[in-house]
Length: 145
Image 1 (cartoon, rainbow, N blue to C red):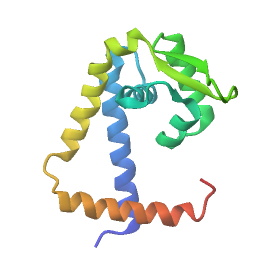
Image 2: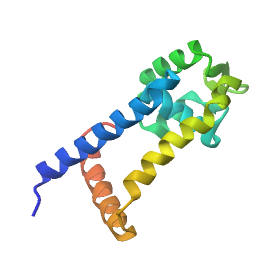
Image 3: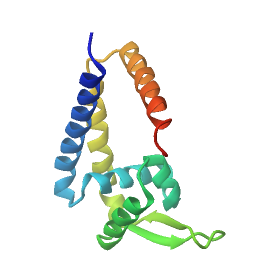
């Protein structure tokens, strides 16, 4: 039987591998993995999304999202505007440049998901999802997330 230590190390390796693949695939588009993650979210129906809500949905800090959005804005992929009602909030909109590479970005993520999905049964996925959900729940009781 695998130890928790082995499982946690496996999870770290999986995340590292996915980051390496995504970064490698996005490099020709002059995008980092973090930039790709945000663009992928926006391209999948979250266009004109509040920056804070995007941080929540990606489970990353607001400051980190802000730095990535600054970079995406400088590269011409997004436009940041003030929310019409909540003037403190920023909304992100995709530019024509982002839409021009949108199918490439979506394809990169979909190919990764297909690669991971190959050879894994629905039962395996459901078992792992339950396990990871339980681990997350246990760890969240110990930290302020």
